[in-house]
Length: 57
Image 1 (cartoon, helix red, strand yellow):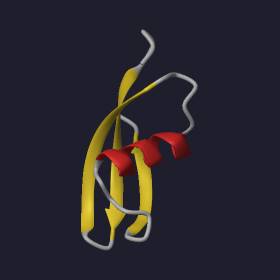
Image 2 (image 1 turned 60 degrees about the vertical axis):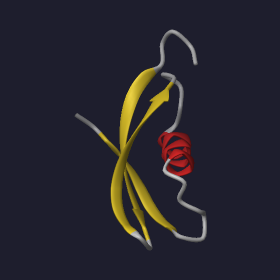
Image 3 (image 1 turned 30 degrees about the horizontal axis):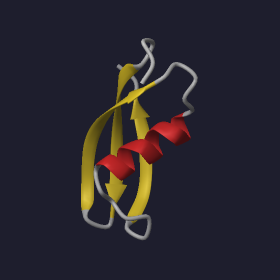
Image 4 (image 1 turned 60 degrees about the horizontal axis):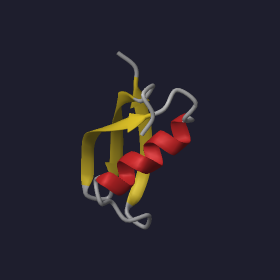
């Protein structure tokens, strides 16, 4: 990851419930990309994924 990467918190909702995850993302990463990265790190399969939201502090 680049020097400019920053931690981003994401709220993920799936058929299994709701969880939060933190991923490292570059400054040009879109919210959609960050949510997808978090979903993958949380090992939530696409079929079980409902929604994701970047949490702004």
